Image (tube, rainbow, N blue to C red; front, top):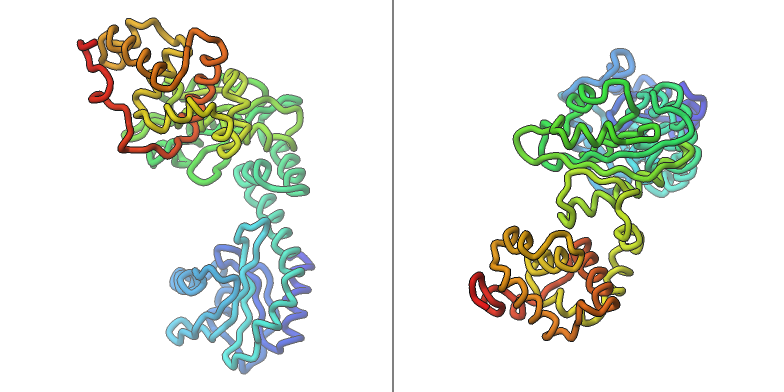
Length: 393
């Protein structure tokens, strides 16, 4: 038992003369003080002796402590053997990591008295988080490495390097997003797919993988349908290479941004690597607000008054992703209709796509619009009624 935890509960017991317990986020006891005979809480005593707490006790505490407040009271429950208690939530880097509970049937413990504990609880919360990383191994260390702060990242990196096969000197992060597909986003599925080849963990509903150097084998499995199941098909994005595990959070950020391109459907792909995104990268690094401010006013007006289908058609044309015949087939239009539609867009918004500058600002604006959809004007949208339809020029 970490001395700091025991020192905290013992000091509070001395101060309030009532039993004090430190719990983790799952209501397992981390440290506990003595309890005087007149304040014996049978559920607490049972949890100390038995561990973990009974399911019905855990469910009651979970319901009682669900409030968004960082402190509150849990009413007595005679059937479960609980006396009334006051609780304070313990956080680490904004994440709920545990609870401090003080038996208080006489309501002698005030919130004002608890305010003095904030500094100690912050330190305890950080230690609880670090202990949890060490205890739960690589899967717990991965999100700590990618979203935590120093020294949390250093501890996580050391643990991953010791327990996982991630190579040396070059690391890359891959994010796999299966969306609402529960079968493809389960830990059992990922464990079967990766085995001990890589370090992987879970952040939200996403599987996050740390590989040494090349991510080709991970992305290839996604493209080949290794995680496909009924429902949404997974997508995956890889960040750039970093030299140290402690810097893997940078690759994770790049993978998150690359995943945004896949979600926008601007690319006809299920996997993408940050290194291959080319001119998409500076647009992603700008962020939504700055990127939207960079759109040429003429292109911005075009976007606000055009349907998403028209914007996609324009993207394909401007980037010369295919010839006009293929473009017309993909969008179920006649070639003449495509030419007429593009001509009218240029005339209406004062653009000339034969001019390199107009073409460039249009490509940039359209890409930004796909990444960060802008508020459109429904009454002004250019649809098939205001532009030529198939077979009509």
